Length: 506
Ligand code: ATP
Image (cartoon, rainbow, N blue to C red):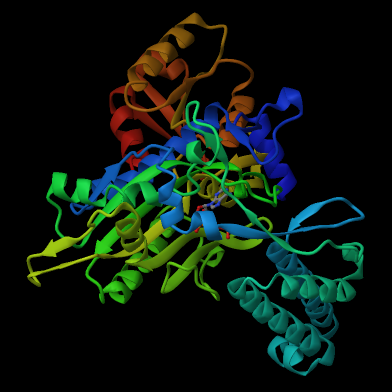
């Protein structure tokens, strides 16, 4: 399904609304509706269970959003949490320079793909794509241009070379003339942290930041947690919570928001063991995504070309969103950077005595960091599809269905009396609903023909529909309809809890 239709579907079915919509909305801020908040909670629960409940050596915390301002000086955010900003003087639009350059590169890539598709059509079965790409001069030139630009982009970003970024934008516009005018301001650094004031303390002294990541709440609590839970290295601290970034590019729906939620885990390890744990968490996190049924070809690793100031290795797990492969989760080897910095600025030791080595040290850290909202978007875009299925009369009809993993689905089971105006059926259905509602999130629906009700449940991703018909009144059996296969099985009401429970459990 295309991106625009996906956004429309999320609104129509109560998943996501623009924030303050009646006032024309607030850019890059969104509210989760009734089904959206259920799905988001299920994502968080699934992450928390697999990280905290399933690991003896990972514990959770819930730190405050406000932190002492020195935290952000120590972490490097005050000085270096910037994105390069550029304005188009003609359109008056504002862009993140690095994203703009990546988008130009994607446009050239799309031109290459177009040439390849055309040639495929022309040559039919005999077409050798690899050879065509290697010998067609136009493609070779375009590919070289992309490689050169992305290489220079990485260097300019790590050197903070704003003039270099501007030249890249200008060069690209010659290659993609349709992209707009060539009238740009200089590229400048823009700090992404939101700030506010503490109490009535005016000026710099009272300046507080809304946290731009949850990680620092974990670092400053490292010793509190280690001592109170008597953890031994290696061990992890996990946290789910809001983060705030004054993002420049504010399109792409919930992919890039100004207020969003992160699910982060910092794993404290012996210095020198980071590559072992880096590989371990890379594989573990990829498996986690695949266990939800996300297809292999929509997930890939992407190594960072330029490492952040705190990292000695970093990789993204990218997902193929409707607008291309983008970062879904980051796995970063953060060394001892954060703890050492906090030690220095706070004057408090943040060391661990390792009984195995018989020595004190500042641990190294391996981080896994995933945006809950991006995870939401990946699941919805992976699951939402339009397909042709036989209707009640056996004729073809189209349906919109959200094939979410049953454990993530907002509603696990819909209870539907076959007819609305037969009291025996509605009473029985209400009894079944009252029995099931203690086990999972269920919905009772008696309005409209049964086929229409099935479609409504398909559209919000309900994996099972239980129908109460006249046979139910005779023998206490009901049908369970499977959202994906459309198969209907007949089971006794007394078995419902265990049959559905087994399918929807995490
Ligand atoms: P990007 O390069 O897309 O800006 P990032 O590298 O700055 O992301 P991190 O700082 O590594 O992101 O944050 C960890 C995770 O938090 C990301 O993988 C992403 O899922 C999520 N995230 C970061 N920024 C946002 C945002 N503005 N809106 C929604 N999720 C976000």
